[in-house]
Length: 257
Image (cartoon, rainbow, N blue to C red; front, side, top):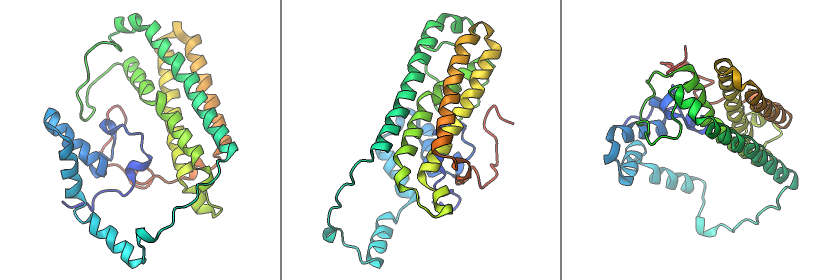
């Protein structure tokens, strides 16, 4: 299998929404997802390893070559002493977890409390029907689209924020490396999730004006989260995501133009 068309690292700073990804055909993770969707119920764990082996048939040899070139022997390595936890980082991680809980717990209650109203508009959130896996091509109302976006990012943005905070100590002093640190990359993805959530809430507010007070409350929470992330990661916009910030996609995801 020719893997030269894959974008290295494109899956490290995405939103994991493969069904809508503009680079799924050029992502190693996306390639496996496409194979899984094609096989459907016939997909098995062995299929994953088979596909991985097709993409990287010489991975073991490549790793051993690298070890030999750098004169590294695992048996000679001494276990490193674990660093003492940074109390400031721990406090920030706990803050992000609390912000997440303070957002998605009331959000879940909001959806449950309005389940009948949503169902009357054709949105059955708690029905037994599951959407089929695969590329996202189905038409849906603006309200349904907004709800789906909110559901996708309700946990995602806070999980990525926690990851970003956890990587603060690994950020380097060198300007370029600092901008390209995993912490800034994770922060950027978290902020993208927050911005898309705000857009979805605004769509909901326009189509559901009788719920405006509650909706504005959720929007204030996300804006507070964004402001806090700006304080902790002022350079998040400078992070360059492989593919998304470096190449023009050959197609647009459903719903964008």
